[in-house]
Image 1 (tube, rainbow, N blue to C red):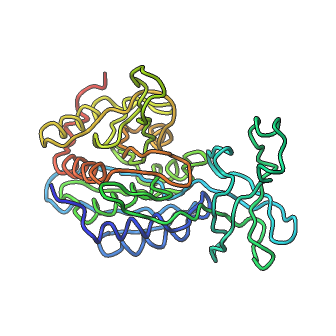
Image 2: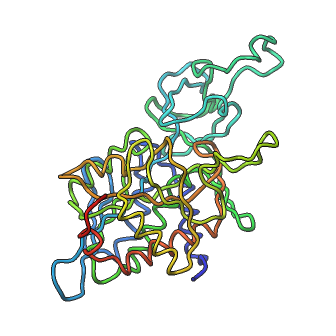
Length: 353
C-alpha cells in the first residue's frame, strides 16, 4: 500500500487553501480542471458550476458498468450583506456554522482575499449577564479596516492555512477538498473495465444541489459519495465510555449504513467491506444518525440509483480548523482504488434486501 506522495500533499494543500464557499467555487474549480484534463476523455462544467469528468472504459467486452464518484468542492463560510462603514460589514452564514466559535477568527474576503477578522465587543465591555448568553449573529461583524475594499455579496472564508504536523493535517476545508484530491488520484489510475464518472460538485453545504444535477447528467449504474465525516472521539467528560463516537481518527475510511438523508445500498456496503477485508485495508462503520453526503440527493434521481458513502473522519467539522490523519487518507484511497479495480455488474444482479 503506497504512502501519500509529496505531490499529493501539495495538491491537497492547494485545494484546502483555495477559497470556495458554496456558490462561489471558481478558484477550486480551476485547480481541479487543470489537474484532471490530461487524464480525462471529457471535462465539462455544468450550468451550476460542477466539474463533470468522464473516463471511458478501454477494455473490450460488453457494455461497461457506469460508476459515478462524487466529492463536493464547496466549503462553509460567510457572505457580506451590509456595510456599516470604516470597513466593517454585516454578514450571513453560508452552510452550517456554530456562531459560538466565530468571534476573533481571521478571515479572507472576496477574490482578492482581503484579510479581516470576525469581531464582537470584548469581554471588558460586556455585562455578567451578557457573558452567559450566546452572542447572536447580528452582533458580529467582519472588520477589514477602512482601507479594505469589499463589496456586498463577497464571500469570506477562514484564513487558516494548510499545515502538516507529524501524522496529522490541520486545515480549513478538508471537508471536502480531501474528497476532491482522492477523486483526482482515482482518475489518474482509472481501471479499464468501467466508465468512470467523476462529479466535483457545487453547493453541497446548502442542500446537495450540484450532485443532484450531476447524477441526472451521468445517469450512472451506481454511485459512491466521498466526503469528510465528523469524528466525535475526544476524551469523554466523565468516567463513562464514549459510545457515541460516530467515527474515530486512525481507524480508516468510514462506511455509511444510513444517515439523515440516505439508506445506503446494502450490496455496496457489503462489497466495500469485503474489499477492505480481502485487501487488509482498515475501515470503520460510521455510526448511524444525522448528517449526510451528496448521496442523499443522488440516490433519488432517475429511477433510483444504488448509492453508498465513504468518508474520511475529521475532528472539528465546520470550524476554522479541521484535523485528520494521513493514514486515514491513505487507507481511504486504497479502499476505493481496490473496489474500483474489482467491481463488476454482478454486484447489482442480486436482489436488494
